[in-house]
Length: 241
Length: 391
Image (cartoon, rainbow over all chains, first blue to last red; front, side, top):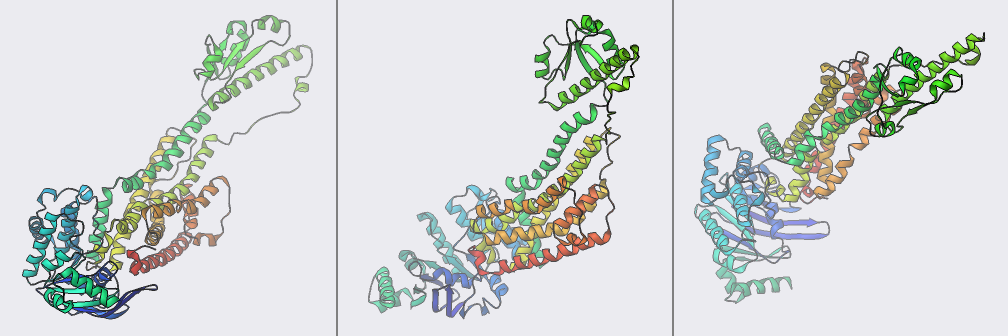
């Protein structure tokens, strides 16, 4: 469960977030959508504790991200905007490093690593150093290390960005599967078809504000557009002038 | 807390042991000092130290024309050997150090008490040749003087009239001063190693982490920034310490090789001295790592960090380099200057002088304070949001 209440965040003179509020429920996929510069990444960064809000609060399972970051970090799995790997570590070592930082040990950790390697079909490159990995392989490593502690909340910043069709499909299948386990998933995207196919709920952002918030159907109804992309354009246009 | 620091530490060590640049910086750079000084002293010192005592093999062309001269040379520390057919070429090629050529009309002119021609073929560009030539010239002049003395004596003239001055040189053991030079070169190299040993790891673990985009996912883990920094600092410290250990062992090895079989040489620092140097270096190593992390946290790219951190070791090493050539009376308060205090202490230890415990305490306390303050600054930089973006 993710709750964001009237969050403000500025960088120097630039106001990145001007009072963002929304809720993402458990067992739902919530899509954070908006044009570039809308504040999606900043919102996610505040939720995964690397930025602090100037005002307002962000909570994960009732824990404030600024006041109780350790509690929050234990409950989230993060695929951040930057998803760099260590070129000299193998895929398996990447997952192990994050698992150990979460306090997992020995057999329990190794079992979890094996489970993820199988689930994400990483057997072929599990013990190769990350230096020569393809985009798809890098993405799977980044995702596996984010899932090693079986987080209840998943924060994904443009998870299909740069993936080919097949990889995008399997990523969407994976996100659904995790949702069906009862987890809370918040992901950002600017690709309408993806959001339409995947999300139970949409939060449309523009210029640091939430412009619309509801199910895809409700959004279509409110804007009077049958196509979600048109609805999105209408929503961002009328609210930002 | 310590468990998470250990996890970060272990990851950085394993990761950087696989990095050629990190390992080369930590394990190969430390050899440069001992090798450079060793080769220098080995070449120059070997020639300088051995020649004056060794029998001089002196090729003499036309030795049969001057049997008395040959006899004189052989009874004064030289061994006359057969000369090469082309003396100039042989000396130029380094096959002979110096060749004495007795002139064709030597015997005739000598008998008539006219200046008898002798040439010495030499190569002024080679130190060993110059040394040999000097010895040959000295012997020839001594012979000339003894002949002159005999001739004047035969005429009833006191030989002292042609000796307006009594010249003698006092040799203060060339080998000894070279050893001293070697010992004085050690402190600046040690300082340099302390500031360069862990530098690649420090950059890689901070600037590199950010540049690769691996910092952001890392920061989302349940680890405090202080724990992250501590693990990285500990890893850089271990690389620095390993680097210094390698260098001290190399210095010891080179020193043993150079002074082997040389009775005139100073015994040099023993194992205990090297352990003392290492222990005194501990606060300084902490300071070096803290400064590296600060610079790495403030720079926005690997290249930028590398530029600053490559220059960093020169600053603290410079005073030590100056001390090699300039004698200098240190005041006690100078021991409190981080890096300079240690430079002075290292110098005293390797030269085998007595080191006061109070001086060690002063230097260590002062440096520990500065190191602690630097670590605090580094920790503050790690806590900033801007760590993610560089500044």
